[in-house]
Image 1: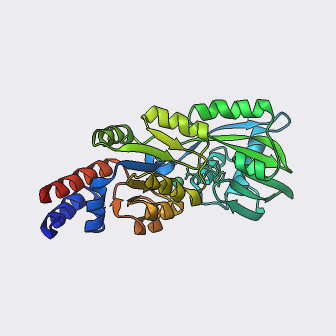
Image 2: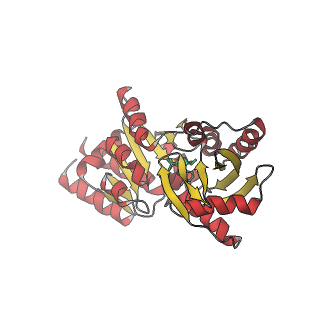
Image 3: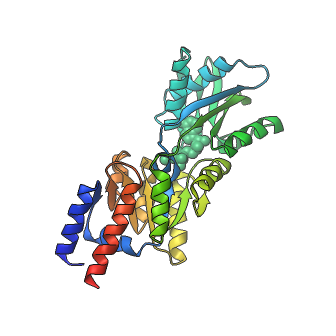
Length: 293
Ligand code: ADP
Ligand code: MG
């Protein structure tokens, strides 16, 4: 494209809330056939809310929430915020946690009231050699099929309960995805969340393919595999964890509401942090490239 057409596109993009890093990003995006989107914070609002606390037989609901929230106070993950806020709404006072550790893509562990406490997903349970009994996993699966994210609370390596949160889909997401489909893009979701939860959200939104339970470090590999099949891939994400994937993609698209390192790794930044900006970016890219052919 000519410098003038690129300047025009960059100016139009900025007016529409799409920051274009350079001519290369603009040119490449016109050739992209596959868009990978992160779930949390990209398709969804990114502010999950506590929806249920399900204690195991001999436990009390508020006690399960108190232990979980005491631990999560040390984490900056959106799931942690939901749990701490949920405890606050019930006026539960929290205990001090020791030996806090965050395990990327899995959960958190530490000591609360002198007991070993852990909160996280099935991978975390597996690492700790614990398997949930049928009743607990059926309950968890029912919630996941409804799009909720379910975490297990372990106390002294026994399951003490489930904590479930839900993150609503952004109002702008369905129409943006429809428009992107109309512009010829195949849309693939990549998420660290559970496969059932991911499938529920993907089918609600008409997503073409999905990769769930992907550890943050492995998102870039999902992109590499698609590129090896000959696809040109754009990736939209918001998290610190998404930076390597944004850099691997032919075009990285950061949510302006997300982490700084995501923005630095991206060719496009969407100021408002919703997918409508990608529709604009695609139209600008295609129009710019058409002008020079
Ligand atoms: P995403 O791709 O949605 O951003 P992450 O890779 O951050 O997901 O996390 C994947 C999964 O790991 C979560 O769905 C959750 O089950 C578990 N997890 C991660 N961090 C935490 C935490 N602080 N507390 C509980 N569970 C967590
Ligand atoms: Mg994320």
